[in-house]
Image 1 (cartoon, rainbow, N blue to C red):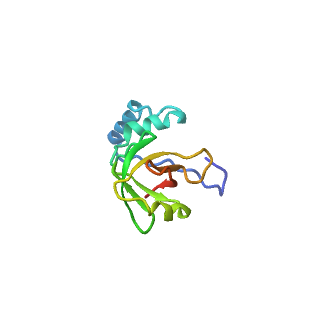
Image 2: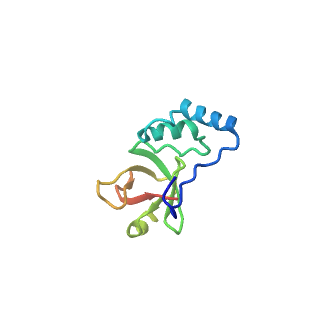
Image 3: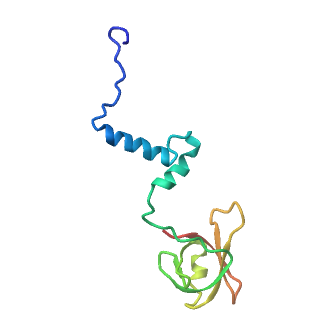
Length: 131
């Protein structure tokens, strides 16, 4: 008991002891009773995957340009979409549909992490993955 006037911490009231025991057993089976550094492992074993994230392409990748819309989004033949840097958009809009391009990584530290290079002309534009 605490001092007079202090609020006491309440323990949660367990209404269903069988259910409580099943929960504790499941936690032990999945390692949830382990220290917090094992949290990721426990989360993976309990969480169900509802949506998969497409695998990032191995770079560099040679593909073809399918289209560039007025908003500066380039769609490539490999199914990926990329936002072209505004200062590079006018140059990219001169490329024809079906142009062979190479998708690659930009220099480290650049704000636009990827590049798209026109194989025929050597022109290069900066990109970010489109949402």
